[in-house]
Image (cartoon, rainbow, N blue to C red; front, side, top):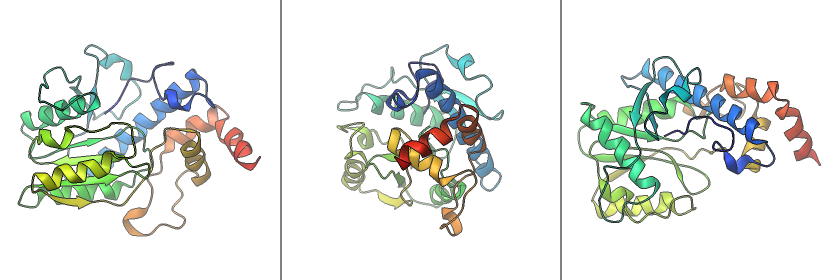
Amino acid sequence: MAKAPQAGRSKTRLCPPLTPEQAAALSAGFLHDITANVAAASRQRPMTGYIAYAPAGSETLFDGHIDSGTEFLLANGETVTEPGVDGFGRCLLHAIRGMLAMGHDSAVVLNSDSPTLPTAFLVRTAQALATPGDRVVLGPADDGGYYLLGMKQAHAHLFADIAWSTDSVAATTRIRAAELGLDVVELPTWFDVDDAASLSRLIAAGPGSDAGHDGEMVPYGATETYRVLERLGLRNRMLDMAAE
């Protein structure tokens, strides 16, 4: 699920401490690393990576910012009319339906804010969805939202009456799954980078760091993200701010 990297429209919650231009550059780094991460996971389990985007006609704005094997999927929510499914939920459901309509056996929506998400989480998601029986895979974020949601059928109820962009999103999604009688396979918690505190956390972790992590918890290297941080001089600046 992604917006094209544009100054004033991308990662606006990071402004300040970033300028709109810096936030857009960082967004482009995130997109490159996240789509490359999906490509890395696809070498272990069959999967296809998509940019689920809006508005229509904006595909070219992603040129040079995503992995070359990534495909495009319009997800502006215009075809979703289910009661209670509003806002971002319409885009999520639109994306799920679009992938399933292409013949995929399952579909996963993934955020564009977690460039260090361990590749193993994506592999584990594919494994869980390949197992017989209906279920949901949930990747909870530490801010109360989720970074990933996977399913085999387009269950509209999973997106109904959700207070998007709040700390209740994952908890409410668990309730919706229980109401449908769906088993929930829960992944480890990870973090989104959508404010100054989480940006500082990303920077402090450093590129390719696996310190303190074992097995599937090893972060993705996020090479392009850290390259952008270095190029813009953001890494030292944020470290200095954290030290003050």
